[in-house]
Amino acid sequence: MEKREQMYEGKAKKVFATDDPNLCIVSYKDDATAFNGLKKGTIAGKGVINNRVTNYLMGKLEAEGIPTHFVEELSERDTLVRRVSIVPLEVIVRNIAAGSFSKRFGVQEGTDLQCPTLEFCLKDDDLGDPMVNEYHIYACGWATKEEVETIKDITFRVNEYLKNYFAAIGILLVDFKLEFGKTADGKIVLADEISPDTCRFWDMETREKLDKDRFRRDLGNVEDAYQEICRRLLGE
Ligand code: UDP
Image 1 (cartoon, helix red, strand yellow):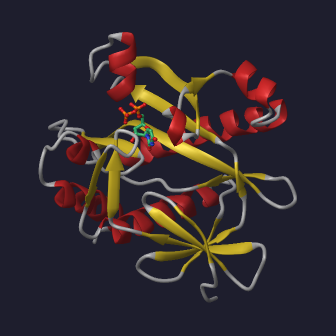
Image 2 (cartoon, helix red, strand yellow):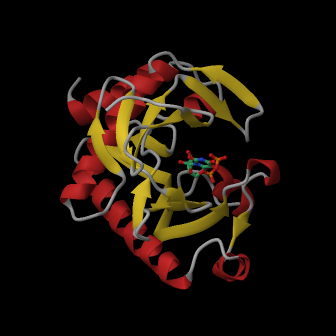
Image 3 (tube, helix red, strand yellow):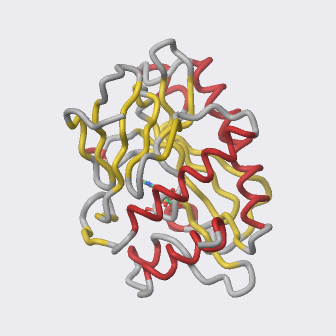
């Protein structure tokens, strides 16, 4: 399968059409942004790691019966995926308080939450991805009630699976963001990526941050942290 015209370029990935109208190719870049695009940089080798890690995890989730857009890894940076229309919501799950949750609610970073939480944010950079509730989603038609129920169900299943999977390799899954797509026949599938760009990972023993917070907060050793996640997951 070859790349045809570029359909879209985002902050961390490009998307290309293919000769099959139901498939496209995602190409991962090393570019990194934070704080809604205010902070920009590159993380050497990030695209390769995020492609590997995402595909590895999507494969595991598929095997658990969770529908995803993943089809086939084509190269170091390129992956064939099902063509979907992206539901314009970022779905955030948290197991431990961190980041904007700690700030917004005054809950100290690192506090265990008594149960996982789920937040919806509108995917709109110009508006700063504002948090929305289900009434907002139905009122504006961003997704139907049935779609939201499916998204919530998949999201909590993904959390349970990944939380345990990462725990087994000594990593705390603090929080993460998922995106969903709708296929041509209207099916909701997990899309986008699952990587150190979109998850908070802490070492279970030392609580060292092994994710994009190293870039956001200028903690150094960003590349090493991404590599460590890849190594623990895939042994490479
Ligand atoms: N996240 C993301 N993209 C976004 C916003 C958040 O991937 O546009 C991820 C982020 O990496 C973290 C989780 O979602 O794992 C929760 O992020 P939070 O709301 O705390 O925002 P942040 O503090 O990262 O701005």
